[in-house]
Image (tube, rainbow, N blue to C red; front, side, top):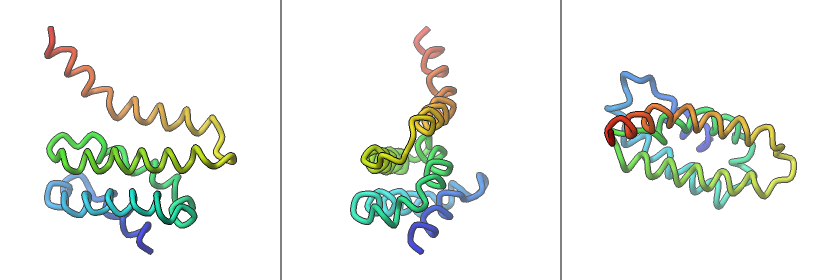
Length: 114
């Protein structure tokens, strides 16, 4: 139940995200702790987590949400690294999602340094 609720809070529509930044922060913190302390419960929804975490990871207007999302992402990656059933193809998909999510910010940083 808690995993589903936290994932729903991460999946708020874009126009509502600014109003719900505290929910998104709470969702990231809950998901991080579930990944660390209830790995079996969390692992059942890990693919949903990797689908929904990216907007929070690149949330430029709320650094606290971004930091909590990065921490939750690290905890989830530690969890899946310990599971032999998690294949390398999925790691590639995670990397591609991360690259796409961060790409526009990296490009903006390059332009700013010129």
